Image (tube, rainbow over all chains, first blue to last red; front, side, top):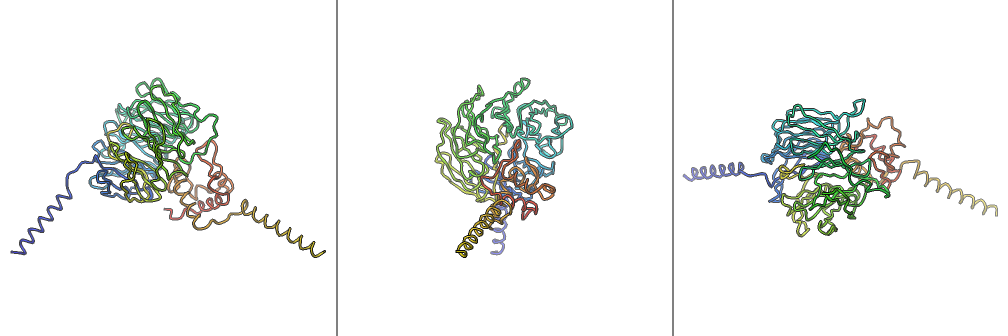
Length: 391
Length: 118
């Protein structure tokens, strides 16, 4: 009798454990942290401020980035070695994985969530895949010039109308790709300027902006009226100033817009540039602690957070967008590589590669509130990106 | 008198040799950095150079830097690129952080392949 009771109790506990394991939950507060040296990602819960899973065998994740399926369940992780992995956040496992190029740096997902696009350095070009199966839909080589050279593709982003926009580093061009028929994409090409190094689509989906390394300025394309061509903005912002060596290329995605004002990393200067997004005229500069890499706005745009290139990469500065002043300098750890805000911005997660940790800051008090261990963490990508244009 | 003159000569010769040795070691030969500094330079190669050349130096915005990629390129010009950068490309000069001798050691290290390389 006692034994029987014990057996029933045991069975009940097992059943309870099994159902707890298969507990229903959403993914809106989940995300991933890339561990660049070990080819793994940690799945994190931004409500619990904790790790809930880990996925390994994702290849070379140096310069890895990720986009999300529109249901927020799957992260598409782009590896440097050309690996593209579809990671299930809920089951902490790889759903599909392919090797799609020799050297890749990122990707984008279409407006309708059906197409994943990868941007590749080798062979230079863009490939389109089915978001469901990772089946190849189209291969678009980034050829330019008379002898069919291929350019490295940078700054790929999605745009409204089932389009993708990207830049060709060596060719100095911006290509606008219409993937309405993903197996027969249509391409329009625009001259952009010397050596575009990254690009972004503004949060409203209207503008594509490419940063130029080879000249002073940015290239702007109006996605409502692409026929008007590329316009050069912030031209000559480095004129008359000594050019400093650039120890790390700035990243433009995460472009901070507060009201009419956008905050942009100056290349090779210890400055954040401001510009008016109505007129696209320069609107002043803010001196900061180093060469900015990421300049990202808190979702309500009241603050802009700035991370830096070597040798100032142990610092993060917070700018008040109302006064355009640096209000705090933080030291989250050695070699800060990335910052990601929670969906409504009460917290920001910051990876410190050389301290093997992710620091979580309260954005109201600017104090650290949690710390998550991670092996050489780099990019942090929360599932809220699923619903953002240009991410 | 004669002896004093001789001593002075020896002293001057000795000083000249010391100066020669010091300048030679700074420009012509490669000093092996201390163990701590070696690790810093390897981390720099892997992480900071790796930002553009790839964590495994398989290339990125910058070219690949594996032993087979550097074959046929003279030491001196590779050191020069590390220190002064390559104009017209995004490659910056690192001379604010690295001595000429350390750049030479980095080139040797790249030729052998970084430790714990796949």
